[in-house]
Amino acid sequence: MYSESNIFEINHSNDMEKIIHFLKTNEMLLTKPPFCKSNKEMKETIKSSLSDKHVWRCTKCGEFRTIRYNSFFSQFDIRLDKILKIIFHWCLQMNHIDVKKLVGVSEPTINKIFQKIRLLCLNDLKRESFILGGEGEVVEINKSLFVRVKHNVGKDLSRQQIWVFGMYQRSNKKCLFYVVSKRDAVNLLNLIYNILHQTA
Ligand SMILES: [Zn+2]
Image (tube, rainbow, N blue to C red; front, side):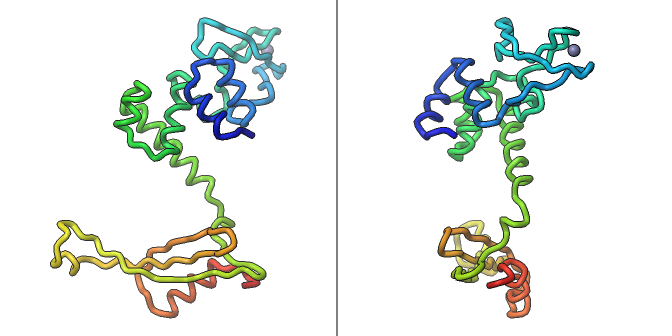
């Protein structure tokens, strides 16, 4: 894997060799060659006229594929180092206006990349991620009231109330929050039964 300093170094680098090596090492680009339409294994070739500098090519039929083939990066046509920088800034929770200034890419492109990253995260959330507890695990529960206050004045407190039910697992600091429509015991117990590990 990679160390933190390595990530910072890559993020400031425009060296395509380093960037591609980093992306492959972290399996963000294909690590094994794809196959051409005639089912022959393609080879990685240098093509300096392209910004990626690397392509997949079949030496038999001459078919080309970009180095981004079958990866997250194939969805975008801006330089790899710029996409990487945008991902990096997204991880730091920077907004698209600041990212635009820093990376020099149009706002729609940044928004598109942000949206694709969010989708990726959403798809990665598996059902198992929503289970807390287990043998010897301590799970704390708590419910809190959130009120959407528009003008920060008292009368707004009569607005719609949102109850949030939270569970926290001490050992790994994993926590889950649920918005609940009813905060009666039956409703909350149902939620607990669904989320807690069967042995809890
Ligand atoms: Zn071929």
